[in-house]
Image (cartoon, rainbow, N blue to C red):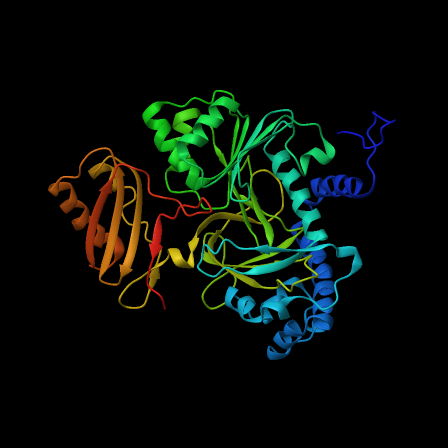
Length: 448
């Protein structure tokens, strides 16, 4: 750790914000192993502070509580939040300016606005505070610590919020607040894939922070041309779900695992993948996460449900029981010894679920393990144009024969549970990512 007192080098001394951050990191190293019952008690104390504040100072939240017949005193345990119906992106869109608290404590300022990428088709803006920023920075350190990353290495980041190529002598915030670091390279996710790979090969990073959609395109190219990043030690996914098979393909290329996390612009960090057990640990100190069945009851281990999140520290906007539009599977106790609850996997988003004619919904992993036995594919995408038409887009170096096309068309209805028209299109070039670098294997175009 560096010292921010120019006359004191060792032991290092930190002041003000940096001292607070360092102390918070040290505390988190302990709280991640507290009994879960103690964590729930602490969350209860914190959420009551949050509820009291927004009930008094955010009229739209007071109205929401009243509509549910609730007052803050009715919430005596964190699990009592289940009495309050969730809110959705459309609720925030419709209220906009009313979703901002009328009185924000001075100790939570300054306040800034964050915007979603609109990946679910519902872009929104949410106010977040300096306390939210502090928590995010502390969790960034947790992520680095869990994965044993060395700060003196070189970092390359391919992100949506980097608008042009930039090289810096340090990693930047938050790590450079407390530690000397190696150099960093930044590029935008919409950059040409050949340009990204050329810059990475010149820079030779030890840590690559990247959207999985961009990584998928890189892996496709590496499989053709060979992998040329011998210094790479860590690959961290941000911003989107990891396409099926990408983990195995990257490991086959270079022996590296993808280090994952789960977050959203609206509430910040939600979970970090454990390097030991492989599960995603919920960041209980900053968020309370519920994974719910369709009837609103909590899912058991192994069940999949909707993700509802409460930001425990946002005193600017009441992000309380916010339905992210994601589906996740509840995890079990992790083998690492940390007591933070777990998520086994993020299954998909609302827009990634398909419809059957009987009104049921499902995740279309249809044939993903069988397709390579028919066609040597490098990438695939399935699109539900309407109930009667589903399209498979396949990236392959070889033309698809009529026999291969027929085998796919015969195979798919078994997995879908009904028999729509199946069209198969093939291309050599990778399927395009969104402007924010995300890649979606399944896209439903039906609006209901």
